[in-house]
Length: 229
Image (tube, rainbow, N blue to C red; front, top):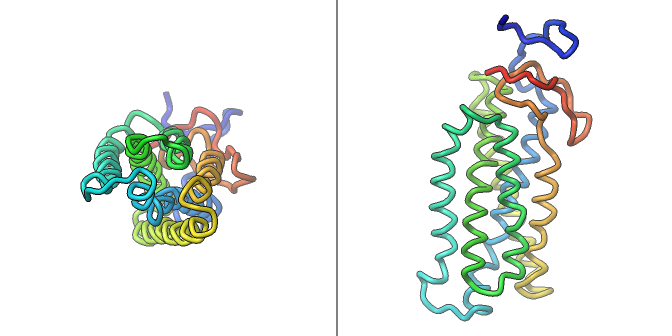
């Protein structure tokens, strides 16, 4: 079988063009997606420890900050697994899996009846961050190539952590106005829904071919079956 990528009609596919200018629509989409990923972390920065002490009446530091341990350990293990997983699954499928893990998080944080539910939410959040953040980094580097990978990574981190800070600020204001739960945590519902719906093409698996515009969050700019590396 020929190694030349072809479209569904059988014609040769356009060559891969790397670079930020050439692929700015897809790159911009991935920056926005990573802002949603960062926003999910920002949900907890202001209110979760207060929920532990004021709602569930925890007193020990180990108990109060167990949610951070659960998140950190799970994210580390998921990051470790994400590399080998990209050899067997598309980046898109792993990104979607990350968002699937993140969907229950705001509801568990908002209405979890016991502290164990909050810790469990952080396990899911660790999977969400480990897969979704890692895949947006990989996809950006796929698009811009080795020459601009430092810029791609910098923009990715900037978008993610700006969203962390902005969400932490917003949840603080909401908590002051409406209480620690459930209103502040429900920002995450919007993040998870938007992150799940705004995604790269179905068949993304590295640089399959030259990206060609967004056409909305559900744009499928690569033909089915193109899974080049």
